[in-house]
Image 1 (cartoon, rainbow, N blue to C red):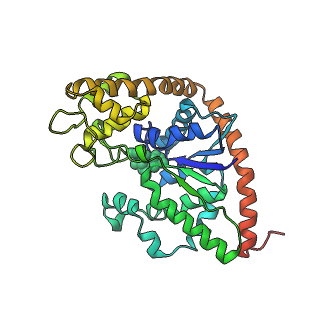
Image 2 (image 1 turned 180 degrees about the vertical axis):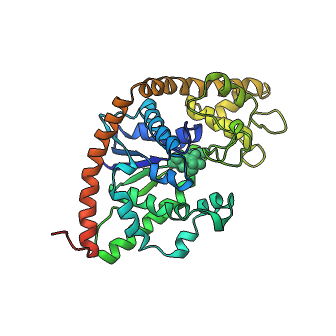
Image 3 (image 1 turned 135 degrees about the vertical axis):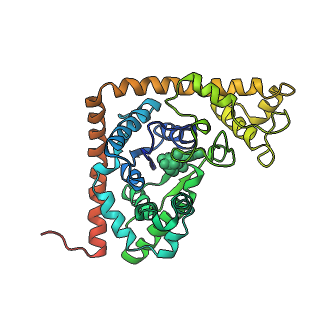
Length: 332
Ligand code: ATP
Ligand code: MG
């Protein structure tokens, strides 16, 4: 079985439709066919300095949402990144094998740093793609299911793996990104050209997994559509409608041309109503299961401890190899 690994940051209380369609939905499907490792990227979340209470709460509710979305603790290894100390250790080693120039090319850093001004942005935000490479290479992953915004980080991960293998001998599996074209970038409802994002979307622009059906419906009905009244996929001229068409298409398993025919001559109203319903129908059972899991923190923490034990066994193995290959002395 090929191995799959992916993570999600606890940078908000709820995941959103982009996280679900671009990543988590694939994670659930891949448990059937892959040796699956998934984690809550709490060390990555530190790059934006959350309060301790916020980080603790968001880490637990993120785990609960993943279980609620269908990650099965029997078949998958789900863990909290910081429970495996080796991630930080490998990150440092990879940092020492990364050029300033190649790190500085990362567009996500530029985007996120632009908000505060590049000079005052944290160093953690700058090095985070290298920690991400460590996360992936640690588990010798073959495939990494992510949204399109992670394409460049995966390229960096592959470069670092190849360089390390060339310098120090075969150590890491070189991973492939697994990105589904139709859902690689779910747009913000108010700004459909921008990606829906936990940390930068406005409340009106984001459909949260833990939202109730009423606000979900309201937000979809108020989503920016485009001039005209035809329900047609046209990314250039109708980014808003195209975004909603993609969502309805994957959630209902209906090809886009069939949807275009179905709503012909009906305007946007009926179409948006169906989008809202499909989203609410998908999120409601996840929200209910998440609430149930959150009512028993002891059990949730126990499941995460089981995941950590399984993940740690592999991390220990990889790090023994890495330390030996680069010439760090054993403790004796
Ligand atoms: P942040 O704004 O804090 O970076 P985020 O919304 O980008 O949060 P992440 O935790 O960084 O979420 O990413 C988790 C996964 O969701 C990644 O695989 C990422 O590529 C994917 N993803 C995030 N946003 C979208 C989106 N709008 N469309 C498709 N996939 C997405
Ligand atoms: Mg992100």
